[in-house]
Image 1: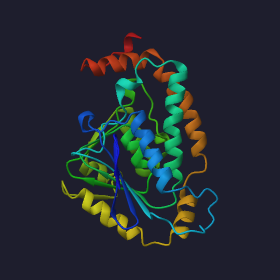
Image 2 (image 1 turned 180 degrees about the vertical axis):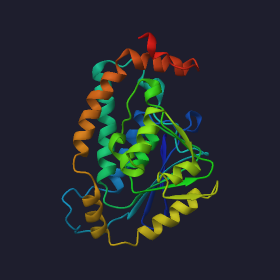
Image 3 (image 1 turned 45 degrees about the vertical axis):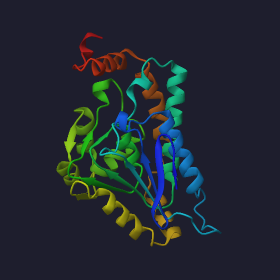
Image 4 (image 1 turned 90 degrees about the vertical axis):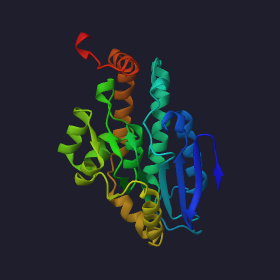
Length: 268
């Protein structure tokens, strides 16, 4: 379909839209430009059906796939772009993230994510906003927020425990865990686990099957399954993450990351 600077958008099968993050030099880290390009691609191709009524016109796409290029989904948020933000800049950053979160959460077609290699932070948040997550055996799930002095964002305080259960989510967040593909499948983070290199094919096959479903009925079920307080969760997240991004703990967390050492929050 088109190749943009930070994402690749194509149609691997009829009615299936695929959006892949394309920043291999940054291990597909997600920054403002990635988020903006994803949002614009979705808005152009999969309009939100906000009222739940059946559409008058046929859908151009009946399934959506997220992925990454060259062996990784994404290393997560682009950390250097978060450093040194003023309070207003931090608010603007979270508001931009939440615009995309709300859009993905309200898409009334199946949303699938193919995970290979590293999937960290924001990439996990994006995947959790969808319906299916397919993982390859070489993948690893990285939840780095607390060791950076941050809280989980992208709505993860709600979406992660909804997928894996509260005890597992608590461990992943509090311990800044990195879990391998087998464990991710065991706790339910992955719906399907496939061999290395087979993720894209399996995800496209799954999306093609799901695209045959009655989309009006699917959208209604998806809407009923969603938690009604998601917007409130995002509002709380904005306030809390802004206080973290502009505070001394993130400053120490960022410095420790750049210096490749363990953060020392006890000195603060």
